Image (cartoon, rainbow, N blue to C red):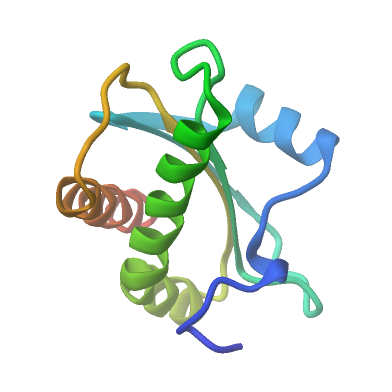
Length: 128
């Protein structure tokens, strides 16, 4: 699978999978992000890492604002996911990850990118 893009197979979908992730997953905060993740069995047809990005309507009333933040989060994940993929592929594991935006303020892409790097590093460390 190409590590350059963010394919449809890498999107976390399905109501039951998302509920299970949010109720049973391990979580931590790298402000302004809350990360929830769970290990799962690797399946041949599915991506090893599936990700969900969420920006609450309660904090950002306009869809334009929510979509902009999600776009920035997806791009920062796409740029930094290679370190996570190396660890996952070497250990033959699979992950489901939810990235929840918990701040009331907008952040520049550079700062979100740094926070995403920190979060992915922290996930990698917790898996070892």
